[in-house]
Amino acid sequence: METLANSQTGQSGGMEKIIDKNLEIIRVSRGDITEFFVHGQADTHVSEIETIAAAFDFLAKNSVQAVAFRVFADNEVRARIAADFQANLDGLNCPVTWICQPEDVFAVQVQAISVEVTPIKQADAVVGCTFEDDNMVCRQLSFVPDNLDAERFEQAGSAFEKIETILQGVGLDFSYTVRTWLFVWDILDWYDKLNLARDNFFEKYNIFNKLVPASTGVGVPNPASAALTTEAFAVKAKNDTVNIQPVISPLQCPALDYKSSFARATLVEAPDHRRMLVSGTASIEPGGETIHVDDVEKQVDLTMQVMTALIKNGGMDWSDVCRGIAYFKDKKDFGVFDAWCEANDINIPHIKVEAYICRDDLLFELEVDGMTT
Image (cartoon, rainbow, N blue to C red; front, side):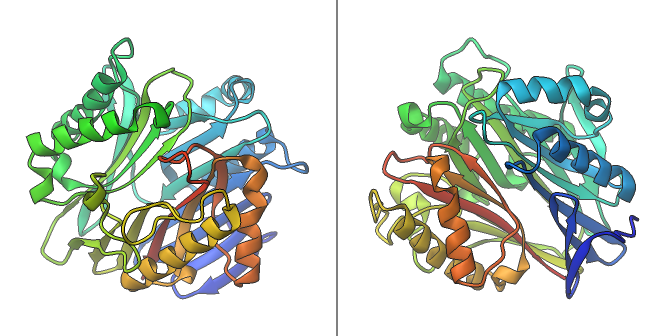
C-alpha cells in the first residue's frame, strides 16, 4: 500500500480523503478490504495526460485493481490516451467506459479494490468484471450494444438483454442488479422509447415485482456511435447477513409514478459496511414536475436539498459520500455547484461533465455513492 507521504489526508472513521498529485481520492477500509474512489479532472493547470497518468500510477503504487474505469474526453484526447497508455488499458481487468465531451472538458473516475478482480469476457471483449468478499459477490459491467446498425429502441432493448445474458454467464441474473447507468446519445430525442424498452424488459423478467435498481440516464455521445453506453452493478448475497433494499426520497415521488423505472436509491447492508447508491437526481418537485426552469442556481439548490433528505433517509450524511458525478447541461455552469458546496461547507468527492439531462428544462443532475463502516 502506498504510504502517501507527499499527500494531504483527512481521516473520519473508516473513510479517508487523500489528495495525491491532482487526484481526489476516497479510501474506505472495511475489515481486511480497502476500496478506493478516484476522481481526476483536468483544468488550466493540469493536462489530461497528467491526470490519466496519475490515475494509473495510483493503482500501481497501491497494488489495487480497478473494477470501474470511466473516461470523459473528446476524441482527440481519447486517441492520445489510447496511444500513450495502451499497455495500461490492456492491463485492466475491467472494461473502460469511454464517454465523449467537449474539447475543454476531461475527467476520469476509477473505483478500485484490494481483492482479486477477474474480467468477464464475451466474444473476446471484456464487458465486465467480478469480485467478492466473505458476504457477497459483485459484478460490474460496461458495454455498448452489439447491434449498432439497429434502431435506437432495438439497441436499448438489446442492451438490457445483454446485462441478463452476461450475468447469467457468471451465476447471476438481472434481478441482482442494484444500479445501472445509461449514457444515452441524443437522449431528448428518444427518452420515451428508452423508457419503453426498459419497461418491456422489466415486465419480461418480472423486475417490477423484485428490486427495481437505482439508475442514471443522461445524454452524452460515445466513440462507438452507439445509441447508448450501459453500465450495471449487481450484488448477490452469500448469506443472510446482507440486506438490499430501495431507499425512498422524502422530497420526491417515486420515479415509477411518472413512468421512469428506477429507484431513487439502493442500500446494500453487510456486516462490514453499508453502501448507498443514489440515482441521478435533479430539480423535480414532489409531483414529478421540473421546478426552477432556466435558473441553474435554484436547480442546484433544490437538487441538493432533495439529495440531503434522501441521503439522510438512508442513514448517511454528506461526509459519507465517496463518489459523485455532477452533470451540467452547459459546462459554463460548473462553478455553480462549487459555489453551493462552499457556501454550505460541504466537500463532495466528484467529477463534473457536460451532459443533457433527461428533460430539456433540467440544467443539473447529481449522482453519488455513500459508504459507512
